[in-house]
Amino acid sequence: MAAHLSLSGAQAALMLPELTSSSPHLLFQSSFSSPQPFSSSLPLQSHSLAQPPSLSPPTFPFPSLPPSPSSSITSPLPSLSSSPTPTSSPAPTILASLYRPRPSHTFTETKRDQGLHKVNHEKVAHHVVEHPRDAIVEYPETGSELGISVAHIFNINPDCFHDPRFNFQYSLGDGHGRGLRYCSFRPYIASPHWFVTREEVLLHTTALHAAASSPTDNAHVEVFHKTLGFYCALIKKGCAFSSADDFPDSSDTVKQENKSPLALCTKELSMRKRRTPKCNSRLELLYDGYNQPYIQCSQHLINPTRAHLLLRNLQEFDTNYLHALLLGDSTCYLHTENVFKTLGVGPLAPCTFAASPSEQKSNCPHWHRDRNNKLQRGNLQCAESCPTKYDIYTPNDLQDCPCIVIVSTNPHNHPPPLPIKTPPQLVSCLEALLLRLDWKLADATPRRLALDSGFVCSLRHALAWSLPEWDPSSHDLHPSLGNLDHLRRIINNSWMTSFPQGTGFHGALQQVGEHEKLPRDHRYLRLVERYQLPNGDDFLLVICMTARMSSLLVLAK
Image (cartoon, rainbow, N blue to C red; front, side, top):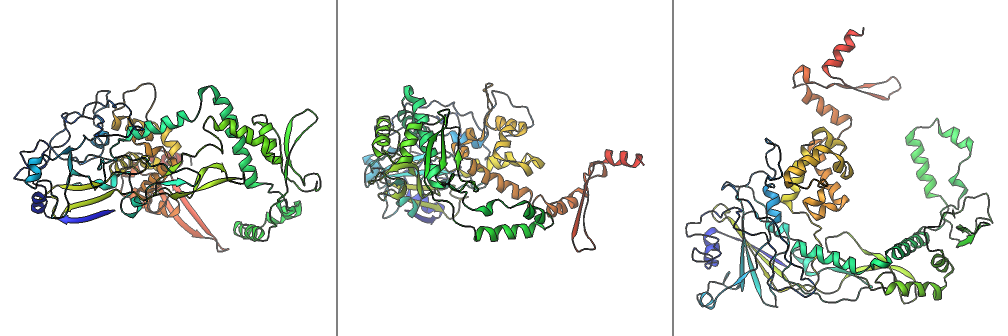
């Protein structure tokens, strides 16, 4: 849960009197001086106040932050006036994302007796930590025990305000109160944590995946997964060729050639509505004269005029296990699945999947055996509410008091969520890179971005990439950008910004007005007009031509 309060600068200073010039971690001077930006005195190391045994990786070394000018950060990207060098500094936003907070420090007994730990007349803080200006904190530290709270002081730039709570990977409000969602086949085990970093979460997840597979049995595990996935696809799709209407004769094809596309689409929709249900016959695994396995529908030989399912080339699957699954031989397939259960894989192995409340998922991606030995995917459900609470204090005048205080109370009772949300500052940095593509943004896709030399060069400059072995990708900007659907959504937002009318005829109408403002030698889009033909149809005419080609066309006469 999160409480949102608005305070004036003087009120915030009175509620946090511990943060004065006498404090070793000072936020405000008595004259409300502006906080200092990133500097080399702020280390980029992972610190932990107390970590659970399951999350205790070594400290991650990061390069020290170079000194930054005292002026506030106004652009998420560095200037491209000079060519990037391996020793150049990353963009300020990248530096902010590399920041790793220090552990919080407790209030001394003397300061408690003076009441300097009070946030207001009801709320008190047991620990406090201050973050530099525009720092990106994705996993804020919280209390290690019930009732213990940690006050986070976020110095912000009032001229370019970014709310620090939007950087949290935890869901705020009622969404976080439900905690992570677990598979219904997963035994719930409380995994409390209170202070982790993004690298520790990724390292812990990688260790779980590595422990789930044995290096000596990788080939067998891969074949097993492929066979099980193939069978699950078979039972889900089945034999879809059961209607003779799926194959129109030649006379119907000739008639359709003279129909408009709209009429064909209307006919296709009507045929889908009255189409007979798909075939629900049993699938069989058989062997041909060359002892090669194949799968066919049981109706394939009974109704030879209809194209029922027939699959060959099954050499990449475990045919014995697949045969047992199709026959329903529980003794055979349970024996195979119990063998792979010892390796931590298969439908009998305990599920380890958990999803954040913000993920649009309702079912577990893995298949499990229920009490009746039937394969099914588990439902994602909330096992227990998380006791962690966030109280957010925002001043009324950010110019007078350029900071936001977030008090986190109680430890989390679930594993830390994966970094699936991109901080807004990094989204702005990526959007700035996309806008530099100019007209190439019209056809941009996640795959084309990885192959675009201009985008990769800009990304190299923003990250200060110095590895010559390979080029950076969007995943190096933030792990959440490894999700291509998430990246595609950001690309579409930038596309709508650059082409609000689209890239079709209406977009060309908008672009031709902009090209008319250019010098004649620089114009490319020359004419965009709509004509109506005698039969009532519209004829759209778009002429694109450079000045040089236009001169050659005149001389060609």
